[in-house]
Image (cartoon, rainbow, N blue to C red; front, side, top):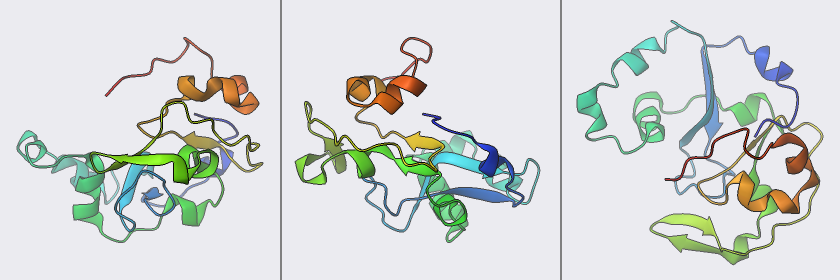
Length: 158
């Protein structure tokens, strides 16, 4: 969910930047990449990375994050370059002790009431995991009601 100005991110002048899995609640790989938010220069040195992701590769690559991990290794993270601009919903607003591991993934217990913390002042994006989706916690956050218009965005189910 976009919850603030993206101006800081528009100032990015590098080749490629994405999220690190560090500090993201539902991630199992603490030193991997999370492609929920990506900044890159079109046609830059990372173009071959996308060109090599063929139909044949997709038979073996489970998620795009894994493809990035296999091909990029250690790259600078969005969190390092722009601290506080992207917030992970689950890490900030959910009670980790109430989470359950389901099929190797951490998920919020259904019916868990999230923490009523305010939106951090530097936040521009709140990254939502597979569960919960914004519409499932809308009633708990004034800031989400302000930025998330019910019915204006389509949510897909896995």
